[in-house]
Length: 423
View 1 (tube, helix red, strand yellow):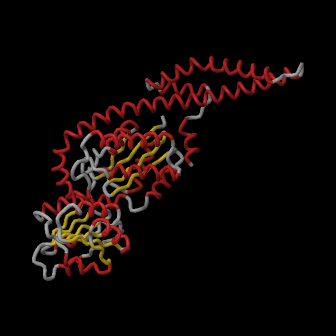
View 2 (view 1 turned 45 degrees about the vertical axis):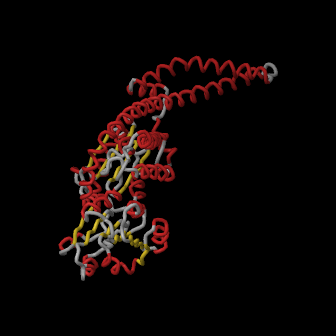
């Protein structure tokens, strides 16, 4: 049976180090490897700072993903494998923010939208995955419109700001340095813009990007090459770049401690990490990373539990509709092929009859129209009962019956044709 299978590595079971080690390459590399597999007809990959998820449409999806996980060298302890229905339910929960470290966060919905666009443009997403991800995006929007699941601190970025506020007993009059002005750095800066601080320094390798964000949100853009100077002035440093190496090394932090009376709080929300973990041994330095944000999550969890229950009701309702949609698709795909076969035969036999009649007398447009209507009506009457029976079989998950129908009419399995259409 060809359905969706998925593999999930996330913060739920993996540490920051394990997430970093899970996959060092680009999403394109994973998609290329998966889509080149002869048993994978469709695929999509979601990669964020605290999750790596792979979705495949395959008759042996679990086996394909199991061997892929082995090739990655990750511990089986941190990997979860889901079958078709589990994958769909997980995806709906994911889009609503119920699987996130910070319950109800909005960022994941945007990331799923990006995945959807990227996979379609890459040609690895066909009808089966498109149905699932379209529904996930729709449900994610509905959950945020009809409930308060995303109220308050709802992202890693805002949780980092809350953590700084909590540890310093307020940010009033403080100097904050944000390193990185990409998606995460921008979210941090937005969260900080509502606080009463002395100044927010924004550092980025491309100064112009930092300047644009600083002008928009009221910060001060600084030259990345002058980072030493601003680490000395900062009370808090939040780092959120996409660099593949440490941005803040031990020596840099050590220099920033000279003539400092208060502790220096460092919050690393990058993946891979931006800050050398060795800095933690320096006196006067407090280092926190994504793992520490679980504390913020636990605090918010209680507040969001009631809203999460409302979201789960929405998910259950939409999940049933999605399952029924797939059932209809199974029957419709088979019926489409069956109708195509019958209509091809109808046209061939009608043309043959017209040619034979033409040997006896002239066949005009009226006669051709009568023959066309006649053969079309016969085909539709012949197909009416099989259509009803096949749709009923799909509704009740009678896979054996559908498979027998495919064999009886020599119809190729739906997903095999989708593989051709996706490439």
